[in-house]
Image (tube, rainbow over all chains, first blue to last red; front, side, top):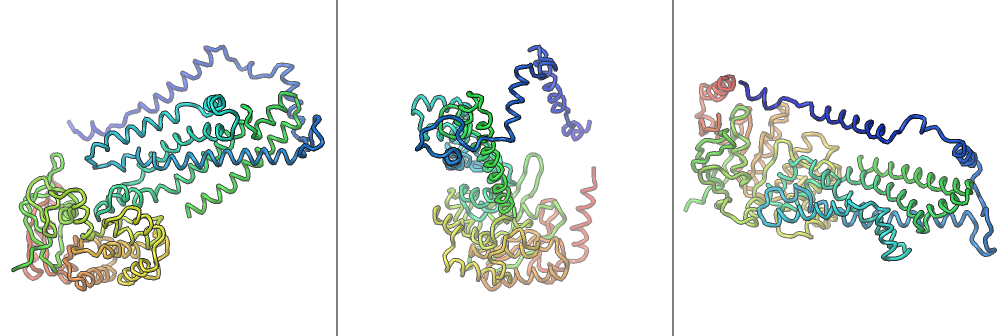
Length: 280
Length: 258
């Protein structure tokens, strides 16, 4: 009996389990009684949809309902809401990043490899539990909770976005750090560097472009999240969109959507440029 | 009184699982010696170098490096000992997306200081940059100080790795296969560089390599390693052709055995 043939035999479990998962999905849809005809809009829905799409080419550029004479112009209020959307997203992601980097380093296996101190068992585990807790509650549920606890303040919105973002960033950062080959880390330990500085200067720099790319992606998520916070009453672009939608004021809805789209496009272009510079 | 040797191995063996990597090796490397470790791939050359650099504890036997037993030291003591040992890795072990000066500056991470290290590696002072420039000058690539390391050629990267070891101000210099992947003319250049640097600092140099002729021409002592055992340990003149044949031929025979 050849031990190599037995030890390295590839197992097809992954492919099979993916297929089983897809079958479970189809079965769930069937259990709900979902059919293809459900995807065709009803008559009233079709009418609303047509009105909504029809407004796409004529977004509102002025207030559509009555406002006091000293109220800011429509476009400047859109700009204000855009600015608040941006500020909440940036503040949330800044806080999340500041928390995620140390958490990721504490949770990383590399940081503790070969350590015999009692902390090396407890600290990474405790950190991973904290990270899981941070990620476990969705940002919109947190928004409701902070809204109740702190009131309708920017801080409540920022915290609601920042906590889960910190958890996700820390989890992904730790994984990216542990994916870096250990060669440089070991070489630095070999010339007397402490474990933290070997991670900091041997491992972290190699992971940095990936960390930055992922951070940009989370910033994009935070921007969309900040928009949606408006649905809960926070004064971001989402608030104006929700109010207009409730009144069936589709031209105003479209103005808010265009503001979001422009925001995302500008953000995507600038983050792509930054990522290119980091990779180069 | 005779000064203590830079390294001493006493009946050192190493096994990983059921594989024996080194078998009862005893040798001393004196101050100022220039030693080549020869042998076929898989003979244990890299492992032997790691033993000499206090990078790997033996399964059995005694190790003394720079007159200390590394494996009785506390963590900080081991770090201080390692900070005095320069090791040029075969793959250079540089961080490609750091600048050249940063890859050299990490050579002093073994010295005390935590926040100071972060400062030194992000914002080097003018005098530190002068030191880094000087070390790079000694390996002939001072003009690459601010280049991104990944943009350098393989030969230049090797010089950065050598500069990093020199920046440690080592008491012992080890190099793992520094001429394994360069053409003969360049190989002699690299040997000259390493020998000059070791000579001018009066520190022992231990190099693992394959090229017997190159070793004979340059080194004062040759150690033949085969299957984790020392086959010979003598001056270049004493190593006969038949011994060399044995070093490589026997090993290849044993590798082919089922």
